[in-house]
Length: 183
Ligand SMILES: Nc1nc2c(c(=O)[nH]1)N[C@H]1C(S)=C(S)[C@@H](COP(=O)(O)O)O[C@H]1N2
Ligand SMILES: [Mo]
Image 1 (spheres, helix red, strand yellow):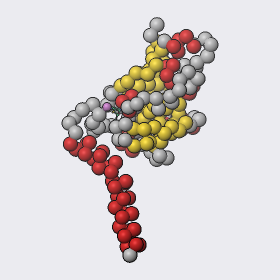
Image 2 (cartoon, rainbow, N blue to C red; image 1 turned 135 degrees about the vertical axis):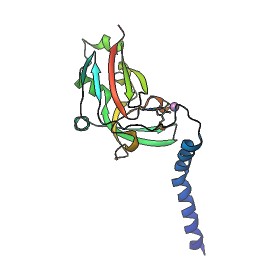
Image 3 (cartoon, protein in one colour; image 1 turned 45 degrees about the horizontal axis):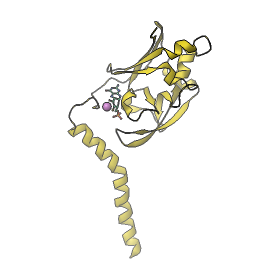
Image 4 (tube, rainbow, N blue to C red; image 1 turned 90 degrees about the vertical axis):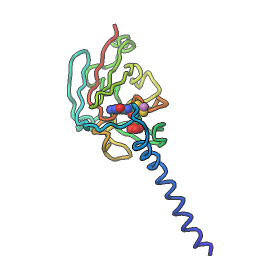
C-alpha cells in the first residue's frame, strides 16, 4: 500500500518542480504586457565586433572559445532560476584585443566605459573597471554556453554579469562591444 502511494506522489512532486519554472516563463511571454523585459523576435548573434578607441576587430566565436574559459553561476531574478554560463571574461577579451590594463593604462581604465549592444540594438553600459578581475568582485563574461549547451535563442554570444541583482545588463544576442574613454 505504501508503495502505491509513493510513486504517484513522487511524480506529482516532480512535475511541479519541472513544469513550475516553465509555466512561469510561458505565462510571462503570452500574458505579460509588452515591456522592456519582453523577448521581441530577434536575429541571433553570430559574431562580435570589438572596438577599442575606434579600432575594430572581429574575433570569431571559435577564437573566443579557444581563450581561457570562465564559468559563473548566477541567479536570474527574471526567470527565478540559477543559470550556469561559460565563456571568456570580458577583461581578458579587452586585454587581448586592445585594452590591456597595466601601470600605463590604469588611470585610463578608471575613466573608460563599455557599450555592449545586441542584434536588436538593446545596449547597456559597464565601466572598464567593473570588468577587470583585479579590480572588481563580480564577473562579467561573454558567454558562449549555458549549462554546457549552446545559448539557443539567446544567440551565439550573451553578456552576463554576476554582480547585478537583476539581469537587465545581460545582453542576449551580443553583437558589439565598444570601449571609449570619458577623458
Ligand atoms: N538583446 C537584448 N538583451 C536584453 C534585453 C533586450 O531587450 N535585448 N532585455 C534585458 C532585460 S531588461 C532583462 S530583464 C533581461 C531578461 O532576459 P531573460 O528573459 O532572457 O532572462 O534581458 C536583458 N537583455
Ligand atoms: Mo528588464
